[in-house]
Image (cartoon, rainbow, N blue to C red; front, side, top):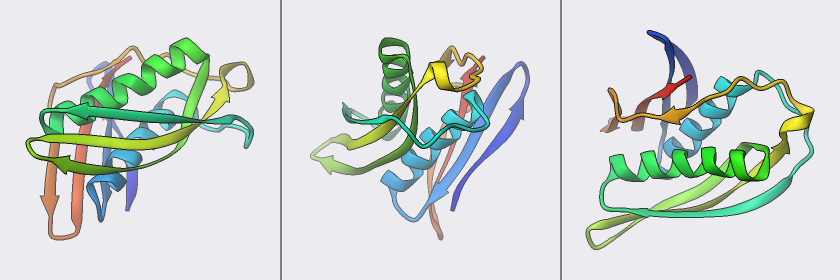
Length: 136
């Protein structure tokens, strides 16, 4: 369980899986970090994050988009993502945290945005699988 970077025409994709929905989102976020930088130091502060959306796809999009926003505002690479997903009536919420590694300490590739292109979240016999494409 974890993530793999996938080549995608002019972009980069992440395929992630886990036993839980929250674990799959965390793995996708870790894959996004790996798409931006191959390695990072062990320093950095932890930051809380909470996102609520009307669908699983929207939750994945909004969560990853919020991490890109945090990267841009705080000048950090969000790594070591943690959190859980809960369904409340017809809405989904991710609550967790990430470690923000200062961008000044890493060699990072710019990742412009998460896309809905080819996005999928599927429950499998082994848990949850996510496929998401990022615009670079």
